[in-house]
Image (cartoon, rainbow over all chains, first blue to last red):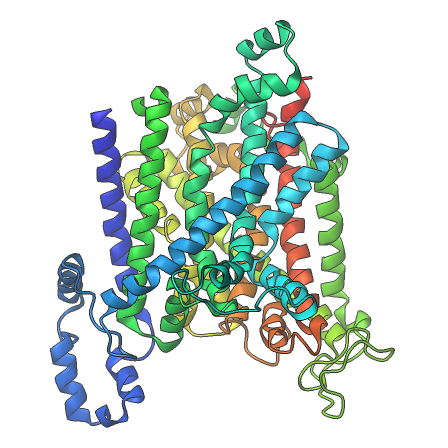
Length: 317
Length: 300
């Protein structure tokens, strides 16, 4: 197990290193000099000499690989630079918005399980019937439906027509718990739909695989009812691959947050990221991308470790 | 000479199943058939858009802006008085074009790198696959937005950006397939017969990987359509006045209370298109991959 943990850890670090190069390169590829962009916002910076001074100050006159090393060093020390738009510390901006996006994640995982789990189990109980076909296509629809459209449909239904939920906006839980829940019901549902569809499909196929094994035949031979076979004997081993879904869901929620927070006007990391991309705010884009990827890698690492713990066969490879 | 050896140890090749047999299996698959039907309808809509659309999609009529559905405008009009139905019909062209072209580019890059990694092995494999992993762990949408912002707006750049994201899935799949068959006797025979690495990769290894590549391609087209509309929705898509579903959704969203169909109709078509390609991918997988065929059917 120790060897397995070490090799997974090393692998994650290598990928993170490669991603950091990729992100750094992408940010440099963006048209327009960041200093020029800053000068556009703060008009008093339009002077050529001041711009040249700033370039030196930001290290933009150095060769690219030195810029990369400097950036990486600073990043690891928690110095993520300042936003070109607002002048705020990127680290502080990020940490202030993180809890909001985490709340959305928790909510969307809740919806994914509440919807996806029963869908998958019922599909297996009624396998190869029209109910199975209906549930399987429902699951594919859940995976296919674009979050931005689903969000707009829900806003139209619940805010414009029924007037039961606010169309957009966000109130912190500490200020108004009920208002907070009303604000995040729709966004979390929208973000959870994809995960629900995936989960339903995973559970269906992994349960079906387990059901073809010998110990299930024994359980059936004992005269157990099908639902008892499913829930007491098949459910546990079938859950192992489902661990993977959490890793996938996390990656999807992070990306979905970019659209969902935009539509529902929620001041989380996604909205910060989208605004930074529009404003070509390099430090914010880089920090967001690195943290998002580091997060996804961390979750994937945990998933791999749990997997290796639950299923010893995995550790050998 | 290598042809003789190929006859000697001939593997069952997916490409020999034949297009018609595959099509028949997909048609027999309820969900796959539904997908194929929707895709055919969307394709017809895109091809015959000039015949189907009641108006020129770019004709503005400033006396009739933001109108609800009526006899003359079935879905209503947009913020500058253009016929929504016509714009939705023409919008299918951009979505399908971006979806298919970007997937084709992604598949070519991914298949080549996957073949190379799987066949060469060693440090080439190591480097290619770590780069693939690195690309894969950045969420596609976020990578697309950053790349679209870096490259600038416009259809070509969106296609390039989506292809630059989509190739990873193909590389992984093909490499996995190649590893499965690389040590089989027929490949060894080809080696002995003096076939070049290039020939082995494309003539002997590639056909064996085609089935999962076709399945992935179908799903990737759906994903590409979704990504294109998401980028357009955030304002990073094709340039105006080209009609695009994602862009209509973006503008229509602000008029949700006045003309709900302005955003709901194009959104429905995006959903249908993405869904159809996922449905077809599902059908194709069951048709092409015997291991997964009718998972449930063997356990009764």
